[in-house]
Length: 247
Image (tube, rainbow, N blue to C red; front, side, top):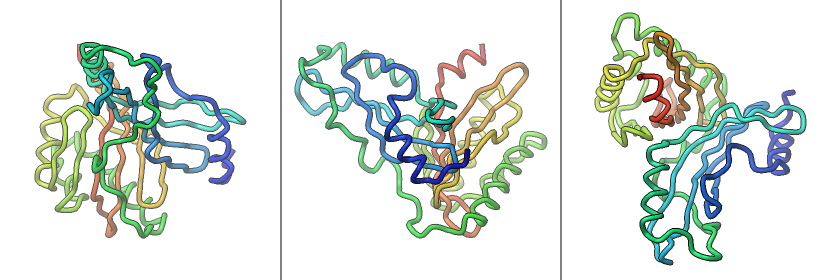
């Protein structure tokens, strides 16, 4: 369809709740940011539960969703979150007493400082597209020769890395070690970009990790830093799906 950004945003605002049902009624959703690129949408969503004791304990889970506009509605391309963390969060809250009457968590937001903001001055889209094509090409080529240094070289020395399962690391050398450890532990032998959204200096990629008769969809969020390099990468996926394909 290729509608304008404003038209897609307006259609998104009119649409009903998209995605699977929340596991318990008290859960609320806070959208931290929304990317729009053509008819594709990527949203960063915090799933929040109120403290059943009336205190300030956080029960929150971040995740992303990729949507595609089809006519007057949106279909879910993928939802990405750590299922283990979701189960643990709900279990902790139930152990603390469960629901509070009349509390829906609607005032709850995300965690301040969870991720940096992209570079404020938007780079030329063609430049970002070239950098993304370079990243995708190096990522696709690396498994064949086992050398992941060319991929790590595309990131700044101070790159921040957040993996929704592994955790947080900082610096290009730490990123390289994180990649090597992930490759060693995973059953996958190929990585290809299925679709991507570019919105200013923020990029969202749907990455397909593939191995012998197994596959996993991963949402990768990147911040472009100029000169063909990236300053932030966030990797969102469900380890429960990884466990199933690895069994």
